[in-house]
Image (cartoon, rainbow over all chains, first blue to last red; front, side, top):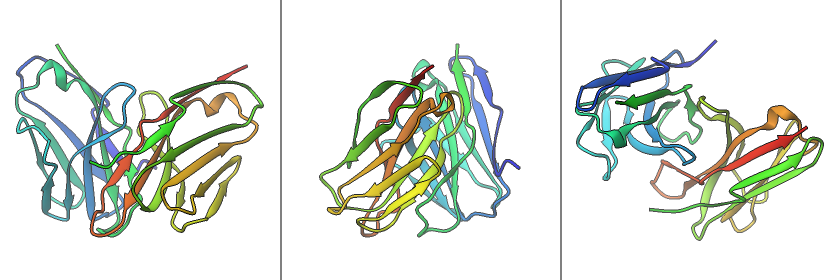
Length: 113
Length: 112
């Protein structure tokens, strides 16, 4: 019944080794978000898509990229992970641009060695 | 950016006690949401509030949208062990801004 699915749940990568996190949704929602959440902190928005329209937050590092090949899938690419990028990465969706409620996936916990 | 002040930061309570937490801001919000996050999981929506003064319940949970539109509170009655987790408020500002602003979270521990 999971509607926003993130894979993998746990990802270990090496310092500087590119990594891709994936998110899929069965809700046919127009809007998809990527958040970074560090321990005991609130989620921090990295970027979001309104359909194919990509919106980057001003303080999102260039090291973070995203792709949305179709409505159902969205990817987060970290080109050269640093130790400071170790965090929980959350994907969320909303039905359309004006809808406030966001539905979150279970997250991917990224470790950087 | 806009900030939400969420308090308390953490709470330790006995099973069966009632709990109250709140979020305040200097800005006016159009919508307030309350989420719960279990360890290692994503946030799950508990309650959504859309109008000033609105009081909404979801089982043992009750949340209110403040009259000034600058605050919201969440009450949990008769707490149980599975209430343990982090509770986040999130608000949507008025105007064209559509993104959510999150509070810093309240870590709730329920002691048996």
